[in-house]
Amino acid sequence: MNVAIVGASGAVGQEFLRVLEERKFPIDKLSLFGSERSAGKKIVFDGKEYEIKKLQHNDDFKNVDIAFVSAGGSVSKEFAEDITRFGAIMIDNSSAFRMDKDVPLVVPEVNPRDALVRPKRIIANPNCSTIIMVVALNAIERLSHIKRVHVATYQAASGAGAQAMVELVDQCRQSLNGEEMKAEKFAYPLAFNLIPHIDVFTDNGYTKEELKMFDETRKIMHSDVLTSATCVRVPALRCHSESIWVE
Image (cartoon, rainbow, N blue to C red; front, side):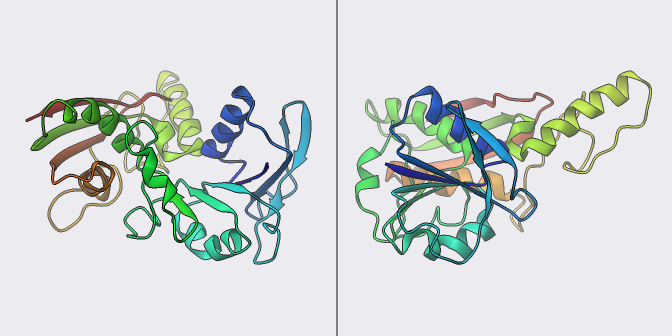
């Protein structure tokens, strides 16, 4: 099987590679793609060195079977046609296609059969917090229909990318050294702090991150469940957690 990773140098791209190697995914040919800034970088996978190529509008995906894509929504939208037009299945980690009616939004433990119907040859990966929640909700839904959910998420710096994790470590060091903490990836310094603000606020007072949990949960579970979410960024490098109330 020929596999491509788009966004190979990013936090999620690196996690893709780690899991593929750990699970001994059957790969005949591996192709890595990234931005102009990442092009030329070398990455070791399964004992072999691979060079990241610049993502371009060409036929680089002609012989690719599966492309794992995590380079942001705008990149996914711009290059979806290039990735899929020769028959490759695009598994997209961004929010670009999650609510597209012709793109399945899949959590394997919950709705694996949805992945079999993919008219655009794209399978969307849900928001990280949604995934955590629906795996638990699905077990409850089998016993009794869920009407309403209130959830508070506590999301680590990893959810904002590799540079956000570096910034958190730097802020901890700055604070402990009595220096001013510098914040670029977050609205405020995250070290020794809690920030109830992930993504932008909308007119109804919820952030886009919180609304994703409402919309995505209904699509994944094929349900009319109502979800109210409060999403909080916490000063941990990895590992999100949630507190969920279910009716």
